Image 1 (spheres, helix red, strand yellow):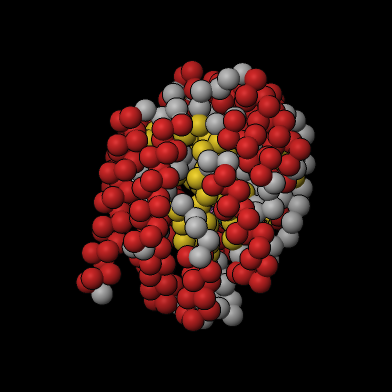
Image 2: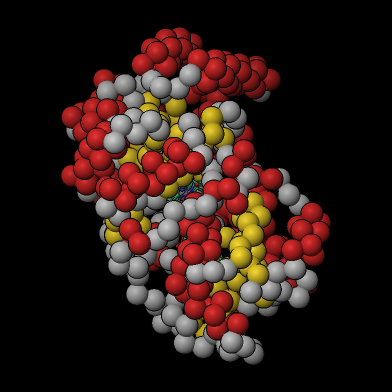
Length: 431
Ligand code: B12
Ligand code: SF4
């Protein structure tokens, strides 16, 4: 059976334009490595990175002649994923959706869109494999754990699938099947991703992760992660590897062990991860020693009330010579334009090296127009501060001086930084 896995385009996301970033679809990468190991021929179509439209997709599908199309879908890709599914069905193919959005809204998606045959909920590897094998035998999807499917006019949600116990057993992604030349940060640094754990035991109301992973958190061993980093460094030589976990910092002792494993092997690859703010300086220093170059601190509006911890996190990152990035999502229910401005002022006072602002589009929060306005204003205000500009320039030169990235990259980064800051200023002048 021939299978095509597709990453549809995303809604317009400002951060990807500003930071010149295309994240590699690491979920599809693990899924395809697993299916390849089981003997299947997988073709990847990253429509997002390739900027491919539906007519080009149709052409590729006709050329490839797959039997089955699997489509990744998160909230920022829903309309594009549905269009891809419709086009695939028009080509007479079996269409299956996976990823966070169908994992939590599978039934509704199937009820409303008759061109989708099935949805794989949560972790994809075993459920998708079972579904493929069932198709090969000409059977229905009845009873396949983790799958929601259509049976005539009815939508049937099969039971949950027990999760993979040993994540170390999963094969490493085969990135040469992906358009890796398009996965870049600041438009020039080759970027790849790994995951070291899955799930989260917290229960934030806006988040899809707890339901996707049945309120559990599982992790790989530090050695398994170090093996994958070594493999990536040798085979693909990325400038940065992003650890794309739901909750990488769930267990700080484990993070420490991971750093020790990286350090022992003298891994020549820089990495970055999402982080909470209550990380001690000693751990950040260990992370730096293990080549961590950036921490993306997930900030929440409530943190403004306890700003001491947040300020300390950025101060410590600076002491450890790690780039501190403020990650902030605007527009949760109850927020207004003026509360968002208050959050922004708080972020401006943090001495963050960079800031990534997102819009909450998953709930009935702020309207799109206000969200767009605050998002732009946030980037513009953050990057057009004179004091920030000078400080960051000096800091970057110091950081590059100590890091393993080459002179060419340092120059490209500073070029990006300069252009970004000036384009923000330009925007401000115009408005
Ligand atoms: C890292 C991350 C980011 C990073 C990088 C994003 C990237 N593109 O890599 C940053 C910080 C930039 C980011 C930004 C945002 N993110 Co984000 N992000 C994540 C996070 C924590 C990890 C994603 C990941 O790599 N997972 C690891 C891989 C292994 O898992 P996976 O992709 O889910 O794949 C597995 C299964 O889903 C399944 N599967 C996947 N595809 C398919 C396809 C088929 C056919 C099948 C059968 C199975 C299958 O099999 C895979 C292997 O088991 C997820 C949480 C999550 N678990 O999805 C949130 C998440 C995807 N983000 C989310 C959101 C909302 C956002 C933002 C809009 C900001 C916000 N919070 O409002 C922005 C913008 C999104 C964008 N367009 O990029 C939501 C999406 C919600 C939803 N209902 O879809 C999530 C789920 C978190 C949440 N709060 O609920 N994000
Ligand atoms: S801590 Fe992060 S991953 Fe866990 S439920 Fe909250 S937002 Fe989701």
